[in-house]
Amino acid sequence: MKITVTYASAGAGHRRAAEALYSYLRDNLPEADLELLDALETATPAFRQMYRRGYDFLVRHAVWLWGFCFRMTSGALMSRFFSFLNSLADHYLAGGVEQHFIRRQPDVIISTHFFPSEAASRLKIKGRIKSKLITVITDFAVHPFWLYPATDTYVVPSSYACRELLQRGVPFERIKEFGIPIDKKFFSSFDRERIVGALGIEKGKFTVLVVTGSFGIGPIEEIVEALRRDVQLLVVCAANEGLRQRLTKKPDAQVKVFGFVDNMEELMSVSDLIISKPGGMTIAEILAMGVAPLFISPIQGQETSNADVLQRLGIGMT
Image 1 (cartoon, rainbow, N blue to C red):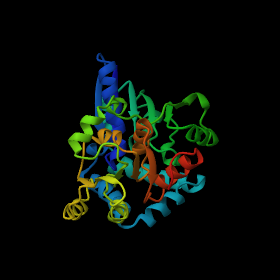
Image 2: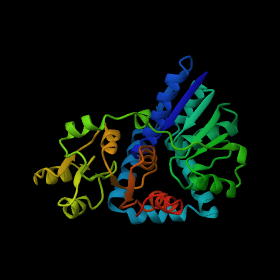
Image 3: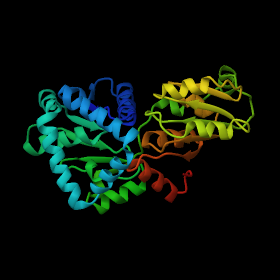
Image 4: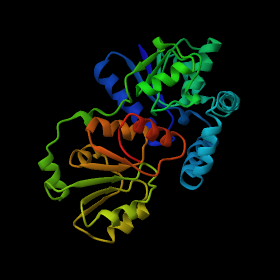
């Protein structure tokens, strides 16, 4: 069986969800012909850079515009119009993913981003591929751009998202409430005493993990200054190297500063509270670890929707 797990590398969450799925399938279906595909890598260089840098620019410097576009495309009429324009752009500027699917002819396509889902759905309608298309929605609310007619199964993170799909006319049997796939390391057992010792923090003291998200944005310095005298802090700056350097220049035994990390699960395991942006993948990891969340600086659109859904469910504060 040929299985393609695909995503688009615009934001880290879609990639991490795809990697988690790929890892699970590799471990549990060793006989399958597996592929992990970044759909943007098949596009023209110009389209690839525009897609990645455009999203990066909007969420860093014009988040109001991103939020406006998100709201404008959420209504039924406007979403159909913009979906049509989007499909034209994807077909003519990013048709590499379509050609890839045609050449490979996978039996199953599992997509964690709407871009490859849209391409696969279009090819199925045209009869160019016969793949089963599974779309894994990585936010707790459902934007119309996730919905394409030839999708066989939608995997959603919550009953709220399930209800939204039903209201948009998706049959119940095509919806699976399985959650957002995350790395199995978030379900591990942790030697907290070892981790506390390795981090050089005080055992038993209230610990707050502050995370900027993959774009490194948010009022992190203000939060650190407000809390550093009362709790011990673990601060993950991610891509914001300037922030990391500024915090490092203010040495404090109460504050441990990191750039990018690959042991977020360990940092969560010794934390009592996490202050973070409400990205879908981050929320799923927080829920798996059982850490109390406080959400800050949500990106207008998908992250404000995530925070709203969680508050409706009685989870976290914004």
